[in-house]
Each structure stands twice: as structure tokens, then as C-alpha cells.
Image: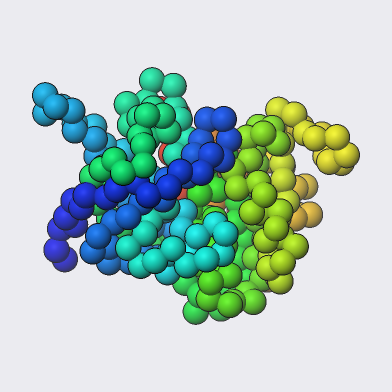
Length: 254
């Protein structure tokens, strides 16, 4: 297997998602394509030669499907970056990084935490915070492929203001047949939500997820503690551990 090469990408467009997160639409000449769920490495190099790199999940569908449903092109990649306090890379990408500026990118990386439109199983997506990013790639890829495979997303966020892709998810939940989206708010729930603020529970997964006998393909992504807790709840409920794929990130980095 050949080693992945670093490519120079250029920022084409920026979309603010929340006060601390934004989506970067990157032109990546020669991009080989990717699978929903894969990620890239991003490297920044200072004039004195110091460099820092971080991994970011790809938000766009494999064919470049953009948030507005229009194809963005085969050489376009979207990343959604959550600014991390004192983060060397995220503070730049979610801050002064401007349209036309270059950045080094390597990928796509990973081949296990991926969904393919040809897969024949209902899908359960469980997101914690910015862990929704690779799951959004899967949702977009499903729509781009015209798939009717049933998808359920259970998205845990601190508050309504912390939800990434809020308007797009609302639109897709209404227009994409077979897609159900449910929210768990851990700090503050909106008026009328019906569920008090608190962490993800077995009751939430029983109500909004798939029962184990349906043998869904399960993808869980988020902070390490969230992912481990969600996976334990799923196994305790009877889900086959072999059908649960997890992707996690630590509390530091960026």
C-alpha cells in the first residue's frame, strides 16, 4: 500500500455552524475521492519550520455533495472544525484562516468506520458533539446515492446552540424519506422538547434507535467517555458488539 501524500488545498468557502465551529469548503487538486466516515490529516507549518497536525473527519459525501444539495465537485472536501481552547490547529482553521489561503492535507484515512450505499442493513448513528461530522457525511452520501435505507440519528449536544448542521438536519428530516433525527441535550433543552436535559440513556436508545433484532449497522462517534458509555448501553440492550463501530476523540487537541 502506497503512503498517502500531502496535498496543498485552498479554502474556497466558509460556513459558520455555531459560534465555535465552522465548515471549510476546500479545493483539493487531485483528490482521489473518499468514503463516508473517513478523515484527513491537516498540517500547518510556521515560517520558522515548526509544524502541527491534527485529524479531522470529512463532512461531505463521497461525490462532493454539499450542504445545499448541489454537487460541489470531485476535488472538493468539506471539513467542520470545532475550535478547541488553546488548540494550535483548530484555533487557526476556525479563526483567521481565510478564503484563498492554502493548507496541507493528507488523506483519505481509514477504511473501517465507513458506510457504503450498497450496505443492506438499517443504520443507527449516535453522535456526541462534533462527533456528528462523519455521520453527516453518511447522511449526505445516502441522499446523494438516492438510497432509501432507513437511517436513525441520535444526536447528543450540550444545548440547541451547539448543534452542528441544525438547519440542514431539520430540512433533511422532513425531506429525506427514511431518515429520523432525535436530539439529546445534556445541559439545556429547548422549550417543548419533552425530554429534560441529561446524558444519553438506555431509554433514549430504546425509543429512538433500532431494536437489536433488526441487526442495524451502528456508528458511534464523539468524545471518548461518550462513545464508551453509548457502546456499553448498546451491548447491554442486546446489540451485537461486532456490528458497533466506534470513532472517538480525546478532550485535547485541535
